[in-house]
Length: 78
Image (cartoon, rainbow, N blue to C red):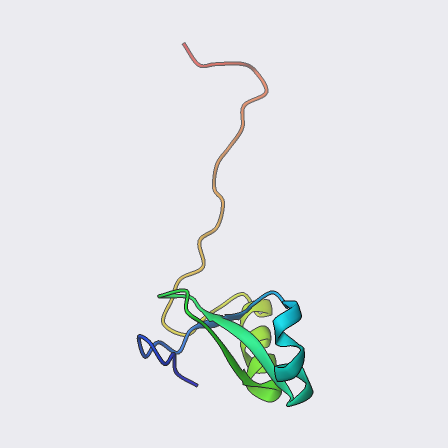
C-alpha cells in the first residue's frame, strides 16, 4: 500500500465522512498519508493493517517519541 501522491507507505485511519458511505459499501475505508496528508480509500483489510501498526506503537522506519517532560511541584527554579 503506497500513497498515490508521494509514494509513502505510512498511513493512519482517517475520520469517516458522509461522502464515504459509497466507499464503505464497496468495503473501502478512508486512510490518510502521514507524510503528505493526502486522503485516499483502500481495501478494508489494508486499512486494518494500518490500524494495527498504530496500536502496536511503532511504524516501520519511524521513531515513536515519548514525553520526557518532568513537572515540578515545588514552583520555579531560581
